[in-house]
Amino acid sequence: MSTISLPALSWFPVWQRNFLVWRKLALPSILGNLADPLIYMLGLGYGLGAMLPTVEGQPISPFSPLARCALQR
Image (cartoon, rainbow, N blue to C red):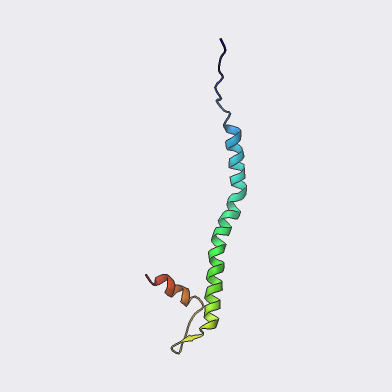
């Protein structure tokens, strides 16, 4: 009669490797996810702000076009 050994902790090395990879890549991933929208916001804000320096005689701030788009439903 043969005995079947249960893999009690055979999952731990896999989990440990996944955790180490996640820990290594977590900060760059978070920074990238935060930086990407900021780059678009700055690019569109200053780009549209340069193209539309005044609206009906009123000077607009660089982020006004984005604020108007965000507030419209």
